[in-house]
Length: 238
Image 1 (cartoon, rainbow, N blue to C red):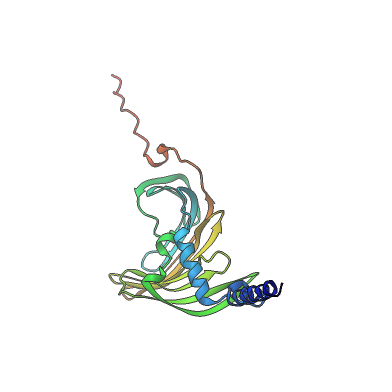
Image 2 (cartoon, rainbow, N blue to C red):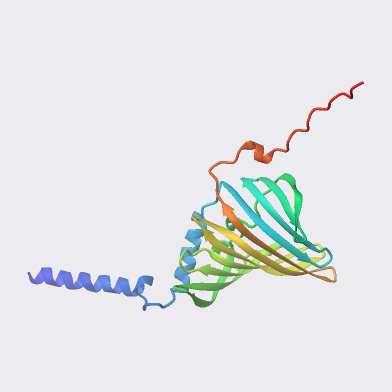
Protein backbone atom coordinates (compact mmCIF):
# COMPACT_ATOMS: atom_id res chain seq x y z
CA UNK A 1 0.00 0.00 0.00
CA UNK A 2 2.89 2.36 0.83
CA UNK A 3 4.50 1.75 -2.58
CA UNK A 4 1.18 2.35 -4.32
CA UNK A 5 0.61 5.65 -2.51
CA UNK A 6 4.15 6.77 -3.29
CA UNK A 7 3.60 5.91 -6.96
CA UNK A 8 0.44 7.99 -7.00
CA UNK A 9 2.22 10.94 -5.42
CA UNK A 10 5.05 10.76 -7.96
CA UNK A 11 2.59 10.46 -10.86
CA UNK A 12 0.55 13.39 -9.57
CA UNK A 13 3.68 15.52 -9.26
CA UNK A 14 4.74 14.59 -12.79
CA UNK A 15 1.34 15.51 -14.26
CA UNK A 16 1.32 18.81 -12.38
CA UNK A 17 4.73 19.72 -13.79
CA UNK A 18 3.49 19.03 -17.33
CA UNK A 19 0.38 21.16 -16.76
CA UNK A 20 2.52 24.03 -15.48
CA UNK A 21 4.74 23.94 -18.59
CA UNK A 22 1.95 23.43 -21.14
CA UNK A 23 0.09 26.43 -22.68
CA UNK A 24 -3.23 25.38 -21.14
CA UNK A 25 -1.60 25.68 -17.72
CA UNK A 26 -1.20 29.45 -18.07
CA UNK A 27 -3.21 31.91 -16.01
CA UNK A 28 -6.82 32.41 -17.18
CA UNK A 29 -7.18 34.99 -19.97
CA UNK A 30 -3.38 35.28 -20.32
CA UNK A 31 -1.74 35.20 -23.77
CA UNK A 32 -0.07 32.03 -25.02
CA UNK A 33 3.69 31.62 -25.16
CA UNK A 34 4.91 33.28 -28.36
CA UNK A 35 7.00 30.25 -29.44
CA UNK A 36 4.03 27.94 -28.94
CA UNK A 37 1.95 30.23 -31.18
CA UNK A 38 4.63 30.03 -33.89
CA UNK A 39 4.67 26.25 -33.68
CA UNK A 40 0.89 26.11 -34.06
CA UNK A 41 1.08 28.64 -36.91
CA UNK A 42 3.54 26.46 -38.85
CA UNK A 43 1.21 23.46 -38.48
CA UNK A 44 -1.92 25.46 -39.40
CA UNK A 45 -0.36 26.90 -42.57
CA UNK A 46 0.69 23.41 -43.71
CA UNK A 47 -2.84 22.08 -43.16
CA UNK A 48 -4.83 25.01 -44.55
CA UNK A 49 -7.75 24.14 -46.83
CA UNK A 50 -7.90 25.68 -50.32
CA UNK A 51 -11.28 25.90 -52.08
CA UNK A 52 -11.53 23.97 -55.33
CA UNK A 53 -14.15 26.40 -56.64
CA UNK A 54 -14.95 29.90 -55.41
CA UNK A 55 -17.24 32.73 -56.48
CA UNK A 56 -16.91 36.23 -55.00
CA UNK A 57 -17.09 39.95 -55.71
CA UNK A 58 -14.33 42.46 -55.28
CA UNK A 59 -14.07 46.22 -55.56
CA UNK A 60 -10.85 47.99 -56.50
CA UNK A 61 -10.03 51.66 -56.12
CA UNK A 62 -6.81 53.21 -57.46
CA UNK A 63 -5.62 56.81 -57.24
CA UNK A 64 -2.41 58.11 -58.78
CA UNK A 65 -1.03 58.03 -62.32
CA UNK A 66 -4.15 56.01 -63.20
CA UNK A 67 -7.51 56.41 -61.44
CA UNK A 68 -9.73 53.32 -61.30
CA UNK A 69 -12.99 52.54 -59.53
CA UNK A 70 -14.42 49.14 -60.43
CA UNK A 71 -16.49 46.26 -59.10
CA UNK A 72 -16.03 42.70 -60.38
CA UNK A 73 -17.50 39.27 -59.89
CA UNK A 74 -15.05 36.38 -60.13
CA UNK A 75 -15.58 32.68 -60.80
CA UNK A 76 -12.47 30.61 -60.08
CA UNK A 77 -11.71 26.91 -60.42
CA UNK A 78 -8.03 26.23 -59.90
CA UNK A 79 -6.24 28.63 -62.25
CA UNK A 80 -9.29 29.10 -64.50
CA UNK A 81 -10.85 32.53 -64.00
CA UNK A 82 -13.98 34.17 -65.31
CA UNK A 83 -13.93 37.92 -64.59
CA UNK A 84 -17.16 39.89 -64.95
CA UNK A 85 -16.80 43.68 -64.76
CA UNK A 86 -20.05 44.89 -63.16
CA UNK A 87 -19.54 48.61 -62.44
CA UNK A 88 -17.16 51.45 -63.29
CA UNK A 89 -16.84 54.70 -61.32
CA UNK A 90 -19.83 53.73 -59.20
CA UNK A 91 -22.14 53.16 -62.18
CA UNK A 92 -23.46 49.69 -62.97
CA UNK A 93 -22.81 48.60 -66.55
CA UNK A 94 -25.90 47.88 -68.59
CA UNK A 95 -24.02 44.91 -70.03
CA UNK A 96 -21.27 43.30 -67.98
CA UNK A 97 -17.89 42.83 -69.62
CA UNK A 98 -16.55 39.29 -69.38
CA UNK A 99 -12.95 38.18 -69.76
CA UNK A 100 -11.36 34.76 -69.35
CA UNK A 101 -7.87 33.96 -68.09
CA UNK A 102 -5.63 31.36 -66.50
CA UNK A 103 -3.74 32.70 -63.49
CA UNK A 104 -2.85 31.72 -59.97
CA UNK A 105 -4.52 33.47 -57.04
CA UNK A 106 -1.74 35.70 -55.71
CA UNK A 107 -3.77 36.54 -52.57
CA UNK A 108 -4.38 32.90 -51.55
CA UNK A 109 -3.20 32.42 -47.99
CA UNK A 110 -1.12 29.34 -48.85
CA UNK A 111 0.89 31.55 -51.22
CA UNK A 112 1.22 34.70 -49.09
CA UNK A 113 1.78 33.33 -45.57
CA UNK A 114 5.52 33.33 -44.77
CA UNK A 115 7.11 30.01 -43.81
CA UNK A 116 8.89 29.96 -40.46
CA UNK A 117 11.75 27.86 -41.86
CA UNK A 118 12.49 30.49 -44.52
CA UNK A 119 12.55 33.57 -42.29
CA UNK A 120 13.68 34.92 -38.95
CA UNK A 121 10.51 35.57 -36.92
CA UNK A 122 10.63 37.74 -33.79
CA UNK A 123 7.73 38.31 -31.41
CA UNK A 124 6.55 41.94 -31.05
CA UNK A 125 3.32 42.00 -29.06
CA UNK A 126 -0.01 40.33 -28.26
CA UNK A 127 -3.37 42.12 -28.24
CA UNK A 128 -6.66 40.82 -26.89
CA UNK A 129 -9.46 40.86 -29.49
CA UNK A 130 -12.78 39.75 -27.99
CA UNK A 131 -12.16 36.36 -26.37
CA UNK A 132 -8.90 35.66 -28.22
CA UNK A 133 -5.42 37.12 -28.43
CA UNK A 134 -3.73 38.09 -31.69
CA UNK A 135 0.07 37.86 -31.87
CA UNK A 136 2.26 40.11 -34.03
CA UNK A 137 5.74 39.15 -35.25
CA UNK A 138 8.45 40.81 -37.29
CA UNK A 139 9.49 38.71 -40.30
CA UNK A 140 12.92 38.90 -41.96
CA UNK A 141 13.43 36.55 -44.95
CA UNK A 142 16.60 34.48 -44.69
CA UNK A 143 17.33 35.14 -48.37
CA UNK A 144 17.28 38.49 -50.14
CA UNK A 145 13.81 39.08 -51.59
CA UNK A 146 12.70 40.88 -54.72
CA UNK A 147 9.17 41.70 -55.79
CA UNK A 148 6.82 41.25 -52.82
CA UNK A 149 7.81 40.06 -49.35
CA UNK A 150 6.10 40.03 -45.95
CA UNK A 151 7.86 41.86 -43.10
CA UNK A 152 5.21 41.60 -40.35
CA UNK A 153 2.49 39.11 -39.53
CA UNK A 154 -0.40 39.07 -37.07
CA UNK A 155 -1.56 35.56 -36.12
CA UNK A 156 -5.10 34.78 -34.99
CA UNK A 157 -4.84 33.13 -31.58
CA UNK A 158 -7.87 30.88 -32.09
CA UNK A 159 -6.99 29.40 -35.51
CA UNK A 160 -3.25 30.22 -35.61
CA UNK A 161 -3.65 31.51 -39.16
CA UNK A 162 -2.62 34.98 -40.40
CA UNK A 163 -5.09 37.77 -39.77
CA UNK A 164 -2.84 40.49 -41.23
CA UNK A 165 0.20 40.46 -43.46
CA UNK A 166 2.22 43.66 -43.86
CA UNK A 167 4.36 43.63 -46.98
CA UNK A 168 6.84 45.52 -49.15
CA UNK A 169 6.71 45.51 -52.93
CA UNK A 170 9.11 46.67 -55.64
CA UNK A 171 8.86 46.36 -59.41
CA UNK A 172 10.58 48.59 -61.94
CA UNK A 173 9.99 52.19 -60.86
CA UNK A 174 7.27 51.21 -58.37
CA UNK A 175 7.87 50.91 -54.62
CA UNK A 176 5.30 50.51 -51.88
CA UNK A 177 4.13 49.05 -48.59
CA UNK A 178 0.76 47.54 -47.83
CA UNK A 179 -1.35 45.14 -45.83
CA UNK A 180 -3.66 42.20 -46.54
CA UNK A 181 -6.38 41.24 -44.05
CA UNK A 182 -7.88 37.73 -43.91
CA UNK A 183 -10.97 36.25 -42.25
CA UNK A 184 -12.66 32.83 -41.97
CA UNK A 185 -15.47 31.82 -44.33
CA UNK A 186 -16.62 28.37 -43.29
CA UNK A 187 -13.53 26.15 -43.34
CA UNK A 188 -11.64 28.52 -45.64
CA UNK A 189 -9.42 31.51 -44.83
CA UNK A 190 -9.93 34.24 -47.43
CA UNK A 191 -8.78 37.83 -48.05
CA UNK A 192 -11.23 40.61 -47.17
CA UNK A 193 -9.10 43.74 -47.68
CA UNK A 194 -5.80 44.81 -49.20
CA UNK A 195 -4.35 48.31 -49.28
CA UNK A 196 -1.07 49.70 -50.58
CA UNK A 197 0.64 53.09 -50.63
CA UNK A 198 3.29 53.38 -53.31
CA UNK A 199 5.28 55.63 -55.60
CA UNK A 200 5.43 55.10 -59.34
CA UNK A 201 8.51 57.00 -60.44
CA UNK A 202 8.02 60.22 -58.47
CA UNK A 203 4.22 60.02 -58.36
CA UNK A 204 2.32 58.80 -55.28
CA UNK A 205 -0.26 56.07 -55.82
CA UNK A 206 -2.78 54.25 -53.63
CA UNK A 207 -4.82 51.11 -54.15
CA UNK A 208 -7.50 49.43 -52.04
CA UNK A 209 -9.26 46.13 -52.73
CA UNK A 210 -12.18 44.68 -50.77
CA UNK A 211 -13.57 41.16 -51.22
CA UNK A 212 -17.08 39.98 -50.32
CA UNK A 213 -19.95 37.57 -51.08
CA UNK A 214 -17.87 34.38 -50.98
CA UNK A 215 -19.47 31.15 -52.17
CA UNK A 216 -17.83 27.76 -52.57
CA UNK A 217 -19.83 25.64 -55.06
CA UNK A 218 -19.04 21.95 -55.37
CA UNK A 219 -18.74 22.31 -59.14
CA UNK A 220 -18.74 24.97 -61.84
CA UNK A 221 -19.79 23.96 -65.36
CA UNK A 222 -17.00 24.05 -68.00
CA UNK A 223 -19.00 26.68 -69.90
CA UNK A 224 -18.27 29.11 -67.04
CA UNK A 225 -14.74 29.48 -68.38
CA UNK A 226 -15.46 29.39 -72.10
CA UNK A 227 -16.26 32.38 -74.26
CA UNK A 228 -19.56 31.88 -76.11
CA UNK A 229 -19.14 30.88 -79.71
CA UNK A 230 -20.15 33.57 -82.23
CA UNK A 231 -23.41 33.04 -84.03
CA UNK A 232 -22.97 31.57 -87.52
CA UNK A 233 -22.89 34.15 -90.28
CA UNK A 234 -25.97 34.26 -92.50
CA UNK A 235 -25.88 34.97 -96.22
CA UNK A 236 -27.50 38.25 -97.28
CA UNK A 237 -30.82 37.68 -98.98
CA UNK A 238 -30.85 38.56 -102.64
